[in-house]
Image (cartoon, rainbow, N blue to C red):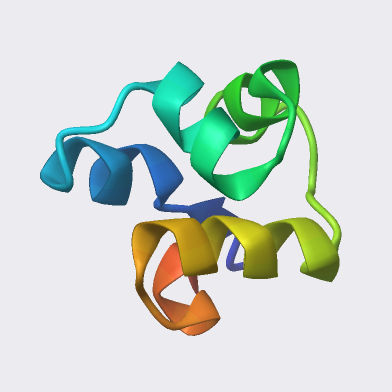
Length: 66
């Protein structure tokens, strides 16, 4: 079975952003970003949209099935 994975850290590093700076830009809690990147939580669509806006990418770029 394919598993949903998130590419937030990869995109964040590409933009040379820290998790804290992404939290400030997106208005998403730092802990939430850390938990998503660690695979501990599945974020809400609203959260993913905020992160995508802050990273200046389509929301579909944030995840894939592997």
